[in-house]
Amino acid sequence: MRIDRRGLLFGGTVSAALVAGGARKARSASPLKIGLVLPMTGPFASTGRASETAVRLWLEERGGRIAGRTVELLVRDDTGVADTGRRLAQELVVREGVDVLMGFGLTPIALACAPIAEQAGKLMVVTAAATSIITERASVIVRTSFTLPQATLGIARWAPKNGLSSAVSLVSDYAPGHDAEKAFEQLFTAAGGTVLEKLRAPLQSPDFAPLLQRAKDAKPQALFVFVPSGVGAQLMKQAAERDLAGAGIRLIGTGDLTDDDILPQMGEVAIGTTTSHHYSAAHPSPENERFQANYQRLSGGRRPNFMAVGAWDGMELVARALERTGGDAEGKKLVEAAKGLSWTSPRGPIAIDPATRDIVQDIYIRRVERGKDGELWNVEIDRIPAVADPVKAGLVR
Ligand code: PHB
Image 1 (cartoon, protein in one colour):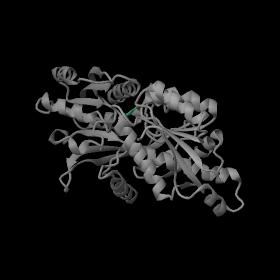
Image 2 (spheres, protein in one colour):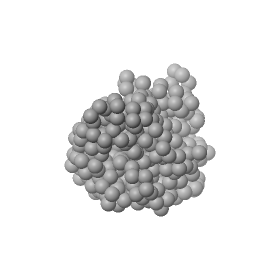
Image 3 (cartoon, helix red, strand yellow):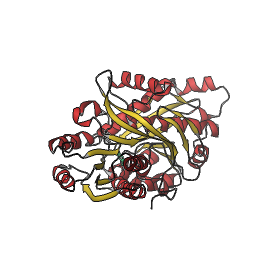
Image 4 (cartoon, rainbow, N blue to C red):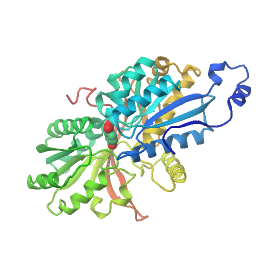
């Protein structure tokens, strides 16, 4: 049972840690409790599964320890509902006494939990949710995922330079979708493009068919899409049914659309879709090859996606910050220690902006292609180095 699983101790016991640590203070030797708040069931369960797998992989590779402390992981299922997430975060802090809160698969859940982390003075690592404003909602938040404007910047500038100067946008109707829509319009227009129409689909149980028909009727050169992780396959299928490609409309978007977790099942229709994002399972680097192979082993052959890499780096962030504080997990101290950290992630080089506590990372332009192995991959064709959140950088208002 995934819900309410608790007390999974990795590595040795507490007493073993004490012996190993010699004269180390009791605080440093006690287990570090990390509360993971994730959608483990419901429509966004794929985000929960990928995030938890990556966290467990990270722990497995480090012998279950962070900065010399054993780690106790407490996974809680918010089912994708903000009120549930808030209640679970509260319980994790008050009843379980967790040191760190982590995860947050959807923006409304991250926003609901921010005041709890702030009041409790706990580090809150956002490894998934991606609306720009999240980090501004609590001083204890650090993000290892991305922001929608950050991911959008790449494709919004790439499209007009590559013969796609008119577009319709289609986004999920909630905060990250609104962020993507706004960033796309402003950055695409500044790069010489024209947005013909802006369409929004409901987050829950969307039917894209009528919206795709409207997009087709507007006769743009490109359709820009943001849908959250897990939803892209359905949109692709409906785009194929409407034969957008036959009407000469190119599909572009943020990489959430061609999510590596479900890309292998999307079929021919996905080929040629061009997106911008911070992680591709096809990213050529030794760090990613290792991540990829080990994740597949642990997940029964699934590919890691951008949710997995966000969670992996969330653990890396906690470890590096704790090294800096000498094992002290007090929230404010950990946040200070996290500012300015940088390392090479499976996605490429990343850093935590000390001013915004948001992630600075390379954004890649990727095209879906069939690889030599016969599988579909997001193949990186261009790279924009060290992109900060364009909203906080004043490029999008
Ligand atoms: C979000 O709710 O912030 C979110 C979820 C899934 C994504 C991107 C953003 O793929």
